[in-house]
Amino acid sequence: MKNQIYIETYGCQMNTYDSDLVQSILINHGFQMVDSPNQASVALLNTCSIRENANNKVLNRVHEIKRVSSDIKIGILGCMATNFKTELLDNKRLNIDLIAGPDSYQALPSLINDAIDAQIQEKPFDVTLSEFETYESIYPAQKDGANAWVAIMRGCNNFCTFCVVPYTRGRERSRSISSILDEVKLLEDQGFKQVTLLGQNVNSYRFGNDTFIDLLDQISSKTSIKRIRFTSPHPKDFPIELLQLINDRPNICKQIHVPLQSGNDRILKKMNRSYTQVEFLSLIDTIKSTIPTVALSTDIIVGFPTETHDEFLDTKHVCETVMFDHAFIFKYSERPNTRAALKFPDDVSADDKTERIMALIEMQKSHSKIKNSQWVHQKQDILIERIDDHQLVGRNDANVLVYCPKSNDLIQVGDLVPCMIQSATPHGLKACVHQQ
Ligand code: SF4
Image (cartoon, rainbow, N blue to C red; front, side):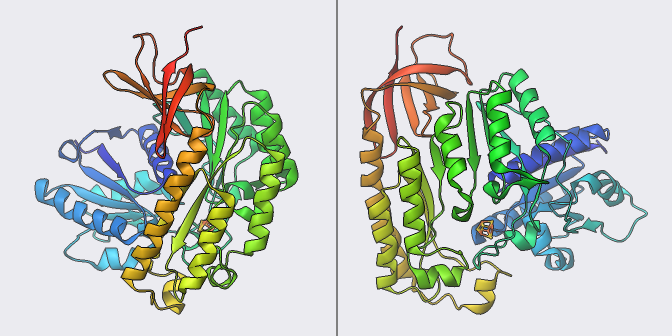
């Protein structure tokens, strides 16, 4: 039981990827992964600091695990580890046994051994932020489902004032194209038809003279992966050549996430987003004219400190103008240790935030319905993600969820299945398998 490790993941896709990476590192060092904390000597919680309820969830979970299994050692990994190292180590009630930040996973085998070793009194931790660690040649241990995630860069240099990532994950650094290509080819051999390139600031990818365009070009031309996606990009890094490449290559999905955050120039400046409303709308025009079939999604924060109703209306105006296919809309909430939390009081009332988010959600529903309706009566290839009893669930190239009655038992998760789209809702599409 000494070498048995349980890992639980919270937060973003990068954390899920990192948990697979951690498993790979631990298995290579002779540890065994188990499915429940009851079977483990060490439980690792790979955490997120983006939203407050993510922190609370983790703290509650630590108590829960300790209640059920009092001898177990608990390790905190991920963004909370870097963001709250001292608080976590000093908290006697939590009694955390080890801490490792996102750049310290290669040190985990020895941190775990130190935590288990009764002779060592001091609690082991490593939250050093590296300028170089990219886990270049370590490939994540387990992959299943229809999509494989591939981290191509880590960290962020943008310092948006509401975001903790530059402090918890450090500065930008990228993997070499050759190591990424090797990983994608391995995934191709395992049968994956889709990869999603992952990074906190994915289109800022740079390795020597190689740019994100070079990387996409090579994955698109040197592998037979059918669908290539990427997330999450920053609006400042969309040169026209990148858009042309996306339009020209059938295996690069015509779906782009362009995080708006706010449509008001004063708020954008306070957020340190480095573009204005006019610049954002001009980028959208360029994207739409270069990739006529593009599907666009976005992230929006309502109620950022000092945002007035009129300034919120600027955000609404941008949404009306762009008509995003999909939007992730959040109420602003203060995140400890961000510049916004330190400098700007969270002064927009809860009621105002609720009113603003409801207005945007309602509008987005009608936009999503209109945008989804454009696919009706079209034949599209659907990548199957899940098979329920009587239903196939997958996504089209635009990343819209598609529901389709199961027509036979031969179709598997990960298959690309030609379907005829029959109807649309704000949340997805209904289709039937297209009989050739
Ligand atoms: S670009 Fe993204 S990851 Fe970087 S600071 Fe801004 S919100 Fe955070």
